[in-house]
Image (cartoon, rainbow, N blue to C red; front, side, top):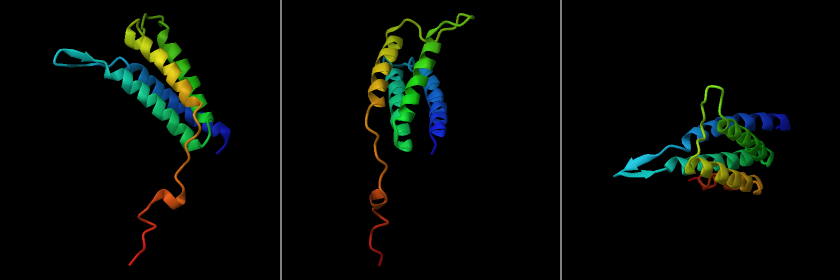
Length: 132
């Protein structure tokens, strides 16, 4: 697969994931009067897993690096107030946590070694079983 194709596919995936995670980070649920901000953990998990998946699929860190750059650009755009006064990342603890923890976790994930694809020998243990 060419590098241009890896960059384009990674950019599209990261654009989609970053926008979804940017809005999902503020989601909360109230259980018996206790507000639980599960969206923060969900959004960060989705971003890290998507980056690791891209690296594994393409067998190069290029996909993860593109993901990190696009995530930063999308996050910056969502943190800047628009002409209409719309602002996604308000000044709250979970928005600040999403930005800081996301930058740290995604930077750490970008430099991890690429996980290998399962080999043909170990891909399906059932196919290696003797037939009767």
